[in-house]
Amino acid sequence: MVKGFRQDRKTIGFVPTMGAFHEGHTSLIKRARKENDIVIASVFVNPSQFGLNEDYKKYPRDIKKDKEKAKKAGCDILFFPDTLSIYPEGYKTYVEVKGLSDVMCGKSRPGHFRGVATVCIKLFNIVMPDIAYFGQKDFQQAVIIKNMVNELNMNLAVKTVPIVREASGLAMSSRNIYLTPKQKENAGLLYRSLKKAEQMIRAGVRSSSKVKSSMKKILGVPGIRIDYIAIVSPGNLSEKSVIDEDALIALAARVGKTRLIDNIVVRLKD
Ligand code: AMP
Image 1 (spheres, rainbow, N blue to C red):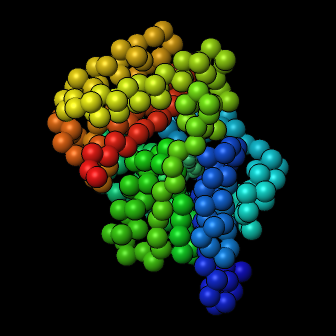
Image 2 (cartoon, helix red, strand yellow):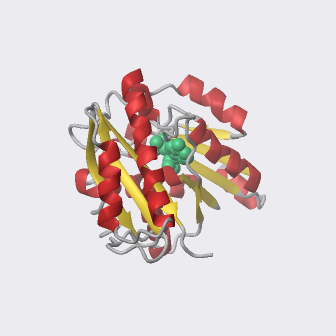
Image 3 (cartoon, rainbow, N blue to C red):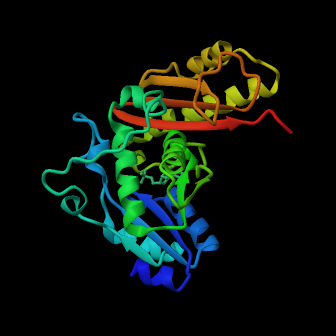
């Protein structure tokens, strides 16, 4: 089918996901709808990106609702392969983007980005999109996929779409359904700490450690455990001790047992 679209010179926009759609997912589909003739989204809870003690088994799955939401957002084809068709027994080929995969989320989730890169390259080879869309919410993931596509001379563009947030500022995530109301309230502090960082940088603070310690104060409540706070260059994720140009402020924290991530880019140019 995809070959037929390509022969007809139709452009294909592709949105890879793990399902349990929320407005973050549908914003990617809507963006793809605007920019392409055909929109394909995939739902695949990818076992190779979950660690042994992570939530692969209990990850939320609701393909019926996903189908409705995808259609409403303008998706033409929703692709939900089964695990064995992606990883047949004896599967052995993996892709790894070195360096970028070992920092930030890669430190606390060894092997995670190897799983992400592998499934993305497989999905790209199946769907053959012109443009693939990723959320800024998973900033590191988008940087890794862009590097992979570039270094492996793959024939597609990768675009990043802004983070969709709840009214409290909490970044939408399929994992938010794990949170109790109290935990949800605490989770709002993640974005508050990022906004504080932005405000400090805009006010002229250039020391990363000063910014980080203010963020730690905001996040220092019972029920939140910081995994990391990183201030890095958005292009190559290298750490910045002095914030002298555009910076990505990214964090991961456990709220109760749920691991959440969020980030903000502070642009200093213009
Ligand atoms: P997931 O299903 O969590 O793997 O996410 C699928 C895609 O949706 C990824 O590219 C995510 O970055 C993106 N995404 C998830 N949450 C959001 C959000 N709140 N805003 C924008 N994009 C998002």
